[in-house]
Length: 272
Ligand SMILES: C[S@@+](CC[C@H](N)C(=O)[O-])C[C@H]1O[C@@H](n2cnc3c(N)ncnc32)[C@H](O)[C@@H]1O
Image (cartoon, rainbow, N blue to C red; front, top):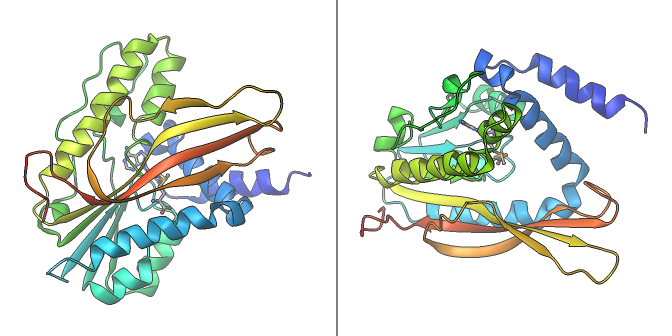
């Protein structure tokens, strides 16, 4: 194998500008590893990438206004039809706690693209040794642009919000039940924030992890990665071949179920 890919990840992690919080908690490395996986598994991930981009575009096409689009969890722009959004909206604001190379390049190349580095959970500073009770702010913080945007896209962020906080709590001996409660609270707080947006909201999120052994007779094991939360969307569902056999384990296939489309505001009105 050689150390090439690992070294590349290490350099990218060191060279990505990010807040001390994001560095300290491993969010930068997390995103760099996601980018490396996306490169390595480009063929297996292609159907997911296309389904996600199509879901975003189907919602974008319906917005009456074309002034401002905000993308939450912009990541490496894998799931974002950026060129199409740039052509449709005068301003496109890309938001993530870590601004990837792809996002910074998009900002340089397109005059209408802005990038905002922001913790969308509001919880990261509270993750300190000794903490035993954590209550995320609800609704979760959003950049001010989201309130007035014609389109807000929550781009495969919902299940991710809890990953780093859970890992931190686990390393600090917090019980699983308490970890689950924080995870669910983070998810609910993000959904509550989306419900406050006055424009059209597109939600892309994975909601179930399926682990299937490729040997023996055992069936698949499924995990609810939204901890019981089930946001309503009008759109489509698909399978993301996240880790074909050999990626996480030689004899394990991991797939995620994903939904993407128009977020239906639980307050009873569509977020239109
Ligand atoms: C699965 S990736 C999203 C991929 C992205 N939509 C794309 O098209 O490349 C999840 C993203 O959520 C971001 N993220 C995780 N926790 C966050 C937080 N507290 N605030 C803001 N962004 C966060 C990560 O940095 C990562 O880029």
